[in-house]
Length: 579
Image (cartoon, rainbow, N blue to C red; front, top):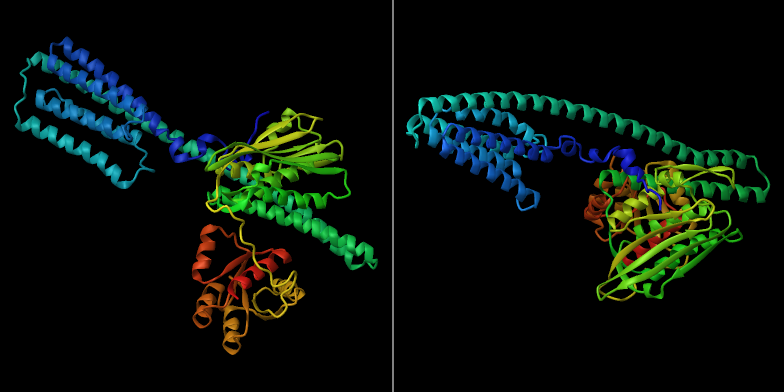
């Protein structure tokens, strides 16, 4: 298969250990085990020493303590306890309290509280730990220290020891306590220095990779933009109708490519921010697979590439999944396959390999007869904006952000993208997904259209402060035979509605001077609560923002730039629902 590299991890998170820097760099859980083992070994040494100077009760008590440390580490390893740190600290404090009852203060065992205090920052990531949890650790240690002092001063020791025994034990406790304090203080300094160095290194990597990403992204956007600018300059001086039509087609192709790149960048931004969500709906899987193929069949008509399908009839079921994201994955894989295939075919295959009463497991694959990829290319092609020189076309060809996004979407949907390819023998992308059946096995209700392609008799108020955007939107709507009146801000729109309430719909931008869309919708709904209003914005609209817009009174949202047919369908859908 070859190695599959997700550029998202490499580009935004240069190393797996940096996925959560405050956790992984400091390695606190690993450090807790290490210090726990060190404390246990120290206890074993003290137990043997106590036995050697004939303090058998103290030796037995320390041995029990060592056994308890070992058991707690074992339970933590098996997942039976959640917090090993508080267990170790509590055990050490309990041992010191019992030692004070047994020996009093004469053996100087209370000195172990000082290295224990210094060990807390090593065992607890104070930058991540909740404030109250940190207070709990310190409270346990300080309270135990006070209890030890009080017991040692006012309670008679349970055992009598000779002066020689006490002297030897006190000397050993002082040496170990001082050495432990020095070691813990040194380790804390070294660990913090390592943490800061790693954090600086990670920050530099993120800055460098993001700078590289922005530079590459700018190049990818400038390429279609350069085509648009160049063709527009040619179009101004062209008189031949056929040439004009050809130029317009090129402009349309470049603008579609640019819009596709922008949408990918927005999705990539959502992924980085952790805001890319899966929104399941009911749909027919068989119909979706056919719909995915149709645009590519039409676009490749007359070319040497054939679109083939091998769709299992058992996919003709209503499932509950995110149809938009599934289609996005298939579209991206189709585009990559077509980009690297000059002749032959690109085939979509979908096969049900496991079914039960609640779900269906489907294997998807996109196979092509293209040039294929070498092992080196397979290792790199999942990087963002990866490019390779195609010997057949003698051009650089790349995958943009499509494959990186596919990997992340499939991970959210519980799947994994696999590539099988060999140079000169084509490629095959495949993945498996499990879908739950929709509760009601019936087709999704389609929106009733006013007519096939027009909005005749519909009066729309267009609210937009940008003159170019207003001109485009007005031309689009009047092209569909709608009656359109315009306002440049929310206050103008509100004044017009007070004079004339015969509008069927409002299309309104969100960011405007004088009165923005958020304030305007509140005022509009007070006087015309049932008038449908569609928000038009160029902002990155996630699920939370869409929910906020709907809650504030908007009935739908259209993201700029939009395709005329998409705007028509949104308007017709809303009008059919309201009227």
